Image (cartoon, rainbow, N blue to C red; front, top):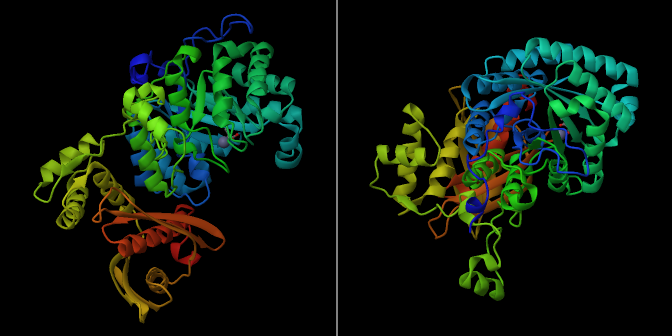
Amino acid sequence: MSASESNTVAGDAEPAAAGAAGAAPAAGSAPAGSARRNAGAPVVFFDTTLRDGEQSPGISLNMSEKLEIAHQLVRLGVDVIEAGFPATSPGDFEAVQAIAREVKGAVICGLARCVESDIRTCWDAIKDAERPRIHTFVSTSDIHLEHQIKKTRPEVIELTREMVDLAVSLCPSDVEFSAMDATRSDVDFLAEVLQVAIECGATTINVPDTVGYTLPTEFAALIDSLYEKTPGLADVVLAVHCHNDLGLAVANSLAAIEHGATQVEVAVNGLGERAGNAAIEEVAMALVTRRDQLDRPVNIVTTEIARTSRMVSNLTGYEVQPNKAIVGKNAFAHESGIHQDGVLKERTTFEIMHAKDIGLGDSDIVLGKHSGRHALKSRLAELGIHLTGEELDEAFRRFKDVADKKKQVTALDLEALATEEIRERQDVYSLTRFYVSAGSEIIPTSQVQVMHEGAAREGKAFSGGSVESVFRAIDDAVGITGKLLDYRVRSISSGKDALAEVRVVVEVAGKTYAGQAVSIDVLEASAKAYMRALNNVAQQREARGANPERVF
Ligand code: KIV
Ligand code: ZN
């Protein structure tokens, strides 16, 4: 029996969004030690890929990329999308506003410090959403109070009161309050702050393990203790937000859910600050696969997991480690003879989940060089990618280019090409031409042409290797010198004519930027991946309102 047969998987749970929109969860008040608190209640999935995930070093998503991910998160069935932190930059504000206006089917949330201008800016960004949420936070641990925010405990209580009041006056139906560094806070003070936030109208209370310090048993005890010490907690959604510094983010999230938490804050592929957040795919599949023990339904459409993971990996440039649970390329591969033998005899001997449950196994041949624009459009739509007008024309041009050189274009190829199209929509610089001469007896020489604001810039370079010479020629055209920190190539599918995917990490002015690109030609994919990283530099500066030229 597959996971999807034995558990609530896609859409057969009670809608968790009832809680997500701010209504109280069912039965929050079971006493510890008797029946499990909130047993059977749905878990609200709050995805923070676009906020905490985007804070990972090197990630810089433009607005089209963020919109694309947000649409995919809706297809994945997440209940709440944390779209960004609007007060941090005009670019973040615009992206959150665009998501709030365009993306339907989930609560759209913006983050704000407990600072009046942050909360007002956040509201301006999200107010047009179908279901908006303001998420405001302040630190509660003594270590943060003393060294970071320089406030006393009474000042934090007062600030919580004023800022939650303000947030509720703007967005009465849905305000989330987070006590940053909750797991290192004094529990009585923490409970006092949470009770104030609830009395002021917060509908979701979040207990973050900000520094990834807690242990599962300890976190479970903290949740029990908060339910005991905070009378209002039984009437609101209790969220947890776990970081992975000790590799315990998923274990801690599940421990909290077992003890009554009703919302879990997660990110695709476990992205996030430092070691990241709890991975959405791991928490969801644990809840689905072990429904027998955990008894908490989810709205996650598990068959969208693999595609979401690939999209986020492609757009962020963050590779998924091969042995990563659920979405790593080896997660469903059996290497040892004993395992292979067992699986052939009876799949469940060594498999607890089915690859199909997360949407794998759908990469058959789909189109060839005689396929038309209409066939491309409908196959892309089946993959959840909706292109029209010029975008479709451009995707078709790319497809034809590849199909002429490659006999069979697979679903994975199409997905990679469409992602390429999304990624280039907001590029500041685009590579129009490149030429490389290399061989065993000559010094590699490259020439490139880059377009910037309608003007062509030429660059050339001689160097030790062909890839290096292309990168230097791009530096020459754009006028900066990026330092290459990492360079990887892999093939998207199998065969000598497979599309090559190149990922680079480049350092510019002390900051790292990732870039990823695909092409039938490794050198072209390398050049485009490097251009992507430089575009991320320019876009990040633009988003902060600076002239992109200034960083160079
Ligand atoms: O890790 C953390 O504490 C956060 C808060 C803003 C919720 O990301
Ligand atoms: Zn966080």
